[in-house]
Image (cartoon, rainbow over all chains, first blue to last red; front, side):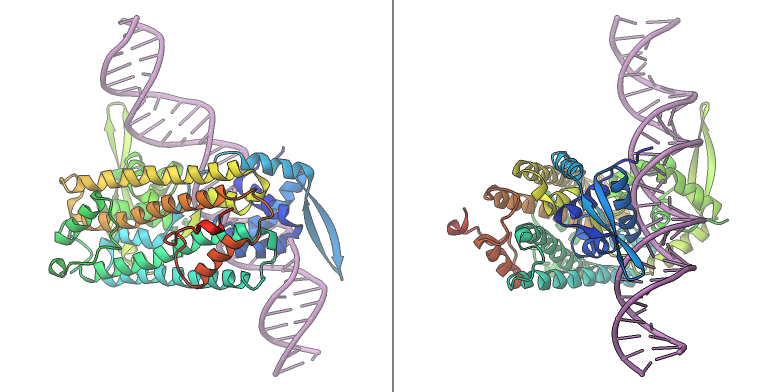
Length: 218
Length: 218
DNA sequence: GTGTTAGTACTGCATACTGCAGTAGCATTG
DNA sequence: CAATGCTACTGCAGTATGCAGTACTAACAC
């Protein structure tokens, strides 16, 4: 039976549309950019091109290097047209998986320090990724893009990543400041500060822009 | 053999720590908040409490209502302490799955309209969620929170959701404006505007704040 | 009074995906 | 020449998802 094409299949097909790769190279490539939009396991990235070959969307040629054999996958004409059709379909909504936010939701089951540690972890990871993406993109100004004709796509994509990481850093700092003023994780409910935030929310104003009022802390 | 505890197990345990629920109610509850931090399938939310019972972290009592039986799950003392220990561990990094961004990365395989449609879809979904969360939270000001003592957690969590949805709306609008100026999806590479964006990135300035320069648009 | 629709409350199954352990060649360094 | 680390994968057990199916209940229409 013919296997079904998943979004991950099209993700791999998209990479093959750039140039032929072996499964190993596909994995490295996925680490560089794909993982920020469609994070998939190494294991899957080895399995997916085989499925594409089976379906005729890619071709695999064995290239022996020494005693080892590596298979290099190339997109076929059918692969190109499958990818084109997929591009015209409507995408699934974005999904965010964040364990740190789960810790916030259930914070009453842990200590203030547990919660602060989770927020700090999330902020630190976002900060590190922000630096990484900034460095890579700064390099493009010096002609370091491996596919110069694709720079516009990488850069526009990077603008989203950077805004997201920046938001995570700023929000975790904001949340830390709030939580530091809590006497405990449980049974706070609605104090003056929470009401303040709710008013900002109702007025569709950002809580990150509004300075914390001295009188309402503690 | 005893099944392993996953993050999803702790997510369900966290819900049970709030109050006892049936698997059906667990699913409804997960729709309201959990899905924004830890999106899991309905199917799993039916299976997970059974696993918790097997492990002694929850107890399930059968409550017949008419001819139908529904099982209501309650957290046990061991469940509480398992949850507490988990709260002290470091969380996994956040992960974003966004098909629309995948379309951007591989946009050269589709038309400008395909790309705009994907961006619009992402923006529209984020805008709808922004409204939803704003409405629900505004209700808390009128005492509509089902667990008043947990309002502080819901609200702080909501501030992140709103910032994220707002970012998605603003970024998709920004990206749309950029893409509208492209002659095609492919082979743009590095024009003046892309260089401008790269300079902003290198200087760690937000592209969303910087107005688009008339002279550089095509 | 009975057919229809919508909501409640699940289960089974095929398929998708992940993590981890294992294998094995090749290159560098001590 | 042994050890370490990188390249380049595969097998397998377990986790998670989507979808179809089952079955009961309540409301309202006809």
